[in-house]
Image (cartoon, rainbow, N blue to C red; front, side, top):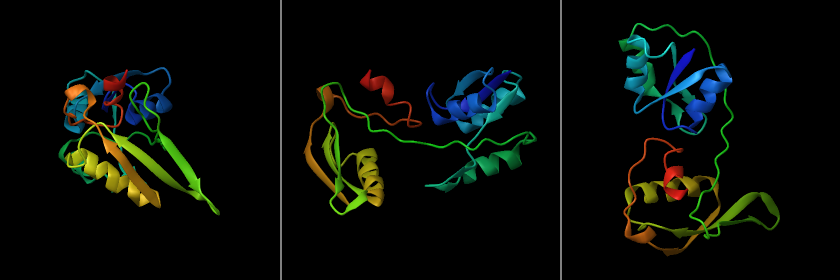
Length: 161
């Protein structure tokens, strides 16, 4: 069985595909639309898509794609997502619990891009939704490179390896 999913190898959608069937051969796709195409064209037996996200809510685009295509829903996977902090080799990431509030954390962040970078700004706002205290120590462009947009949380791992 071949299961199409949106994202890079290592993406949460790939983990969901392998949770659905450990023996499946995952097929990475660049977009949710491509997942539907892969199934419709027979390149994949099944497609797996995120429909709900406890942080972001419903994936409205994927509901729209289900209406546009005549592919049935054949199963469901609930996947616990655990985000991790990622850094270039030699970079230290620090988080500390706030005294008296062990469930709340403060983060110190060194950035490899400008705070004005749209993705960076969004990430900092998102982090601030979950952390009571976030401080940027400095901003450093990584080897003169500009951060490139990514399709999912697994894609940036390739730039750190």
